[in-house]
Image (cartoon, rainbow, N blue to C red; front, side, top):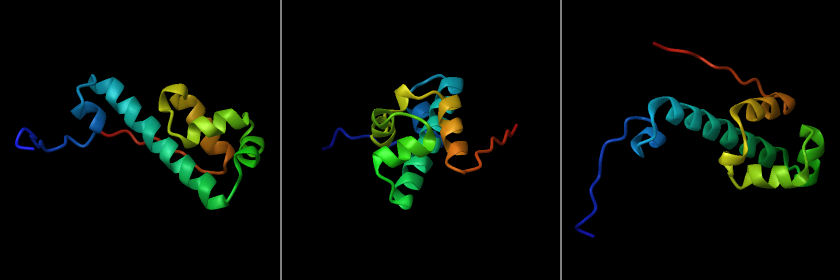
Length: 95
């Protein structure tokens, strides 16, 4: 237990883990969209089959989404699924 070292986060867990800044930002965005999609599907009370039908993908794809398999989804696909769900994804750039 004494070997545990705590560090203040830089605000992006992926950057904190050592990923290059650009890759860390894409990973953060993918994770955020996945979390929101998962919550939306659960809030709707949809089964995986119903979510698949409504979002235009297969049930196994929804299963992977709900399990958080972010490496299997591009940011483009996640934004597409969010839009199909009736969500309004937006990207805000800051200097």
